[in-house]
Image 1: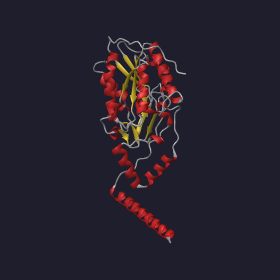
Image 2: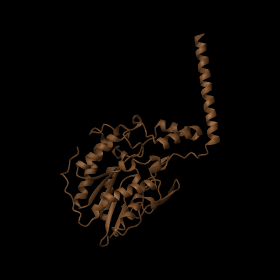
Image 3: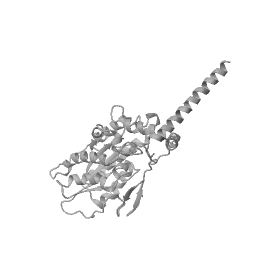
Image 4: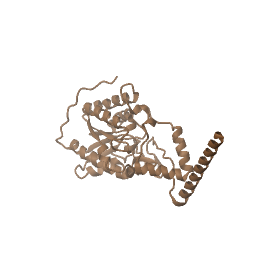
Length: 331
């Protein structure tokens, strides 16, 4: 008898739950007229003189394979060149060419430094080791006076690319097949900027020590970049980009942020942290879209203003190069 009562109760609860979900689904379809975005797929545009339209945005590369206008290789007298290195944030995933951070930096600098040229040497899906290789390739071409190295959270993960988890696949299936699920998903993501729980993030982001290959590779590459720039009398500025989620005491990457900044500064590298710059803003106001959380135009304007403010001293004629400590060795 107890078993039958329990089974009846379970059936009633299940039926009521299903009915509620059906009603919520129907109400959402009637009242919420929002087009559910497709899952954002990043683009890596390799090759010279290419043009591609991806997710409604036009991407172009110049004769050296950069997302940058053509620049005369030979510098004219009075020209100051800044080479920006980084990943998809600096490269401009989701942004048209005139909204890139490098374009805005050059515009801000031009009134005081008419001969300045800011070169976008970034590329999507790259890490600090890749950026060292690009620095070596691009320096003989562009002869930069300043190198700005933009760092993003996943630069400490060994290797590029990622595989989609089963959780992500389930989320995408429900989001595209249920208006109610999509509604709840967008409300939570945009209003509360909830990031991925630590339990679902790669272990390489936490408890950073030399047992983590990505952390070791990052330190080695950063010191190689420093040594390369120092040997050629190139100023180096290191800029740390936060993941645009909860930028407060609950920031999930705080340990990583602190260790990266500490290592760079202890290595004598001029370091700028953009965390406090973005913290006052609603993260969703800085995204290209809820499905593409790269910088939008507002975010590149904010970042460009802060980077330029720190950059001006490196461009002053009387700026003196600071000596840095002896190179660290990374084993």
